Image (tube, rainbow, N blue to C red; front, side):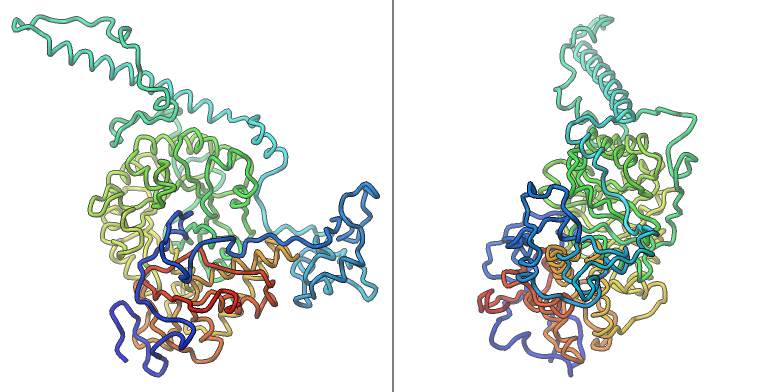
Length: 623
């Protein structure tokens, strides 16, 4: 059976004609996208009943107990509100309708000595005695172990919500920049008048004196331009950057940094929306990744004190070099958000997202739109440096349009500004993920940078890809995104320079670890289990693309090669290769027990250049 164009070459004994016999039909290729791994999506598809359609709750439905048990009673405590409590104190009735335990060990109890979910825990038997009373391991409780840090305190959140949070550094920086912009507007207006006046000079070259030209100009540009610093056009030469402390230049060598980071020769897990959550980052840390970064956080939402946005800053103690990526279109929002981050959390660096290609982000002037608003971008970065005492980094694409790269104009300026790290995704915004990353261009940028480390990003799927891309570009390090989602053990392969023919059981153990991390992070009650299941299934939308090394005719698998229909070396390996989301739910049930009857998962992420499976059966019949 000959492989078709774009397909990986799999040994003949594992090939089959179709993925499924009766339930589904293969409709060819569909160039969907992987953009959601980098940011939110607004892509609309006209296709119906297609695997991967992003609609409905996608498993996000909140679990509501029929009996709403009081949180004090659920922990085996006496409720301080007594009869005035609006929640149920009928523990016996609650336990009668509560679903059966999923397993015999509770991650929360093992780590902290007590389970905060008490009787609501889906592993309740692990911390109740023969009389049904809560068990507490006092020895562990006394140690008060802390594994995850960051987030936002109640005091800071209230201040942000009421617009009472103070930003002294930001206010000073923004005032200085605004004054400089006003002065520049005056100079520009004066020059404009001089040019007009020179055109009116008579043929005798009469001299026109414009001593008070500035006073005759009533407009300095519209108010929104001054407020948001859109004054600079496309080139850095026209941008105004305040040098607030010339005796102490800003940059990665500054002595005021809380932590110096040597970014050279390290692997970096890309910031990935939804799938780049804390439990997934822990999996990658276990396989040896050096640098991790939280999911992209929106500056505006951080300033509003949104709990969900600040949750993206949470950090596990294993993440020894950890950053937060921020995205915004307005200088004021980005700078103030960075000051708040610097005050409220422990983070080693903050990264400015200048590469997100999604329309929803781009049209607001954020992400890759900053590539064409380089004056505004420079003000953001300088402000970020002023209000923090940690390194500032930047991630960007080659440019907006195909065959019109602009990153070479950016790198030299970032280098002059002492930005701690520049990471280039070797594609333009318009390319998204449809063409191979241009590592030769990454190499050109590396030559332009005198002291700023340059990382490359794009299409790394094996240690051979890593070696080749580094050799071509001379990059100081490599950032890996989709490759890590498809096979997180890629970091082990890079460090040990090997192709790991990992077994299906070993891969299942990785998923079990993820679920343990998820139950610790999201909770071990029904809601926490449901959230862990959903994120596990989201991850499966990448994991299923992995083709075991032992099945390939010519390892390694490449990013632009889709798997043809095949069966694995055992039933579990075959199940893990399935492109059906219903099979991903089945895999979750091997670890987290039966899914709720109303749990319907439709993945957010869609593969680029993979087979489109159109399901002829109803969703209900597949569950």
